[in-house]
Image (cartoon, rainbow, N blue to C red; front, side, top):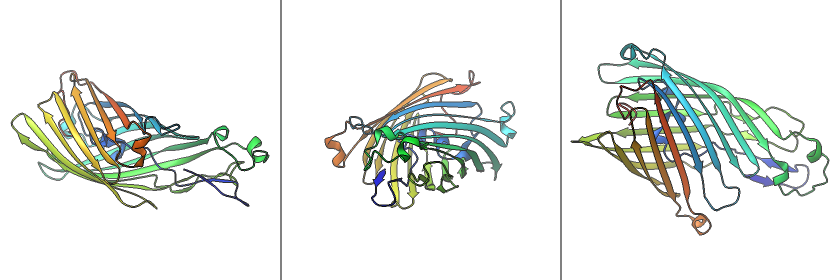
Length: 306
């Protein structure tokens, strides 16, 4: 969000947030580094999201994640997972790009439950396209000479408690909260990344060839109020799944996915809007393409991250 101020502060951009994901339950790793290496193959996800379609300069997001156990050949005894993720989010004149490397340690608690710890380190890149901003004083020389970009380190961390039918997790992103360094435009542009906190839990019930997984997520980003989602996902065998999400004060979303083969899967979601934005927007779309490398003889659907 851009905030225009008079007097000594020509322009300030504050409280920059990470992109929103509807289908995080299909790729919890995008929010929590503790999931790195949780499945016995190399998990590659490519995704695109168009939010509030029909509104000019609405958020658009592209991301890719990849992670794997360090020792895939002896997965039963493997403890370490590694991975990385990149995303690019464009909202009006502001571009946010993030690249991060992750590592996780999976600790067996007994024959059923495990607890994993994950951390991530990387870099944030912010850019403001001043040509897309309506300025109070376009003739101010700072806008002709300043470099409206900032680069800063990024860090994340998470915990994931899980079994074959249960999961609970907490994660924090952008732990290095604060002003992003200095540049020629530091007096005119202030970009701040706020810490993001997530807590989620779900349980899978089995009825013959059908699986039902209710789950919920809490999200807190200061100074915004606490937000939460309630989800219900149903899966038929290892072929097809469908689900619905109810998001507090923000509408509902429907989603579905197909396990095409042991190496290829795809998922799509559509967000319905119940706020005043519905008068101007056609909703939000998100698609994920999953590629499970080195899984030619493995199961078609995930055995743990369902």
